[in-house]
Amino acid sequence: QVQLVESGGGLVQPGGSLRLSCAASGKIGSIVAMGWYRQVQGKHRELVARITRGGNTDYADSVKGRFTISGDNAKNTVLLQMNSLKPDDTAVYYCYADGGTIATMAYEYWGQGTQVTVSS
Image 1 (spheres, rainbow, N blue to C red):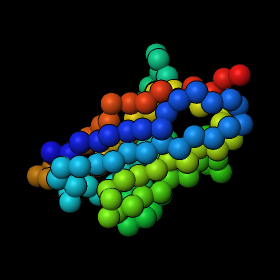
Image 2 (cartoon, rainbow, N blue to C red):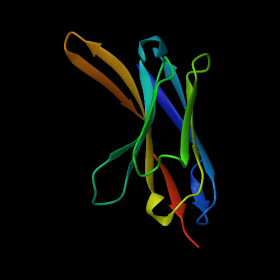
Image 3 (cartoon, rainbow, N blue to C red):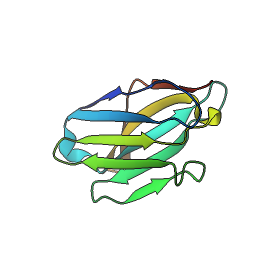
């Protein structure tokens, strides 16, 4: 019921910046929060940043002070501004949407993933 379209990944040198974008469509009225996860091959998928419809944000400790998540409720779009990128930031980044909980069931939606590579 919710579709997520990501853009903005790519190759950047250490210290550089990238901006990821995720647009949600479908039954967007049910979304209570959106954000980004990232995953390195062979490792678990970790939360990078999250923003609620009310504008509250959460960040992984590893990205605090460098990444900024923002949202546009009218466009149902979230942005992840990534500055001072490090090689350790290299991963596949996945957009997600929290569709809330209905009858004890949690609804989650995921984007296709976009590769971010930080390398010289």
